[in-house]
Image 1 (cartoon, rainbow, N blue to C red):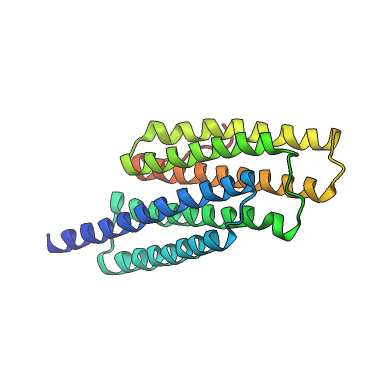
Image 2 (image 1 turned 60 degrees about the vertical axis):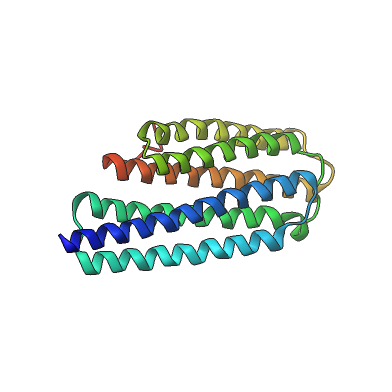
Length: 214
């Protein structure tokens, strides 16, 4: 009984770490998108948040290994620990891609009006996916987790349509084109990680993952 209580305490500590990561990840992506659209420079702050997420991810990994080594969890508890490791990784990737978005214009230049509309729409939908995937984890809502992948189809459609538009009607400024394409690519990758996060949540709840090919 004491062993079970200690394991539960450890699982709660993992949950607390993920809650902190979720708060930081959400504001990091939101800030980077807003800064890109409004022409702000926020890369230093985003870098700090991204580094914090990486540190938290390391803590989650270490805590998970400790729980497995000490208490040999089985069934649901082991599944929860595995899901926590995966969720932590995906939250840390939100920070990494947000940082990439925040530095693109400094690295390449060319931030302008071209592609602004699609970046705005993809950014809004990506934030919706992040919020939904985090809420699904916190509330253990399997249906909400499954809905995240449905939104990802729209993100993919927007992404590939925009690439086709870039080929047909590219801007004269090549730097602006590259900056735009990289930004929407990073948003598409963030959306993929939101699906992965939701899939790990579904695995934790039901023991199955979201099929990416359905």
